[in-house]
Amino acid sequence: MTGGALRASPAAPTYRLRNYNMANNLKTVAIFVARPGKAAELQALLSGMIAPSRAEAGNLRYDLWQDQTDPSRFVLDELYTDGEAVAAHRATPHFQAYASVINDLAERTAVTLNPVAVA
Image (cartoon, rainbow, N blue to C red):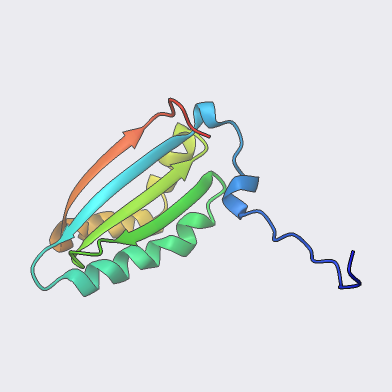
């Protein structure tokens, strides 16, 4: 040691600490393309879902991405502990509010995935 203070290692990301049994986890990836003139509204809606969704007991990850070449296209990456957690998410008031307006704001394509080889 050279006399400098010891540095603490950075904390592991929360999603890794909460990563229970991957065999039961479910991932949803959704791609949204804003309807003409609706990109800002779409981004506000999707951004508003982040905090309450991440706070759900069964949520492991909830990340929103924006396409670099098309700012009207967003990708939502969600990871839940299991199917019950997904069902609980879809029953929340914030999801119900989202579901009531999303079709007016965007075209949506979503897939729900089971883990095959996940590290």
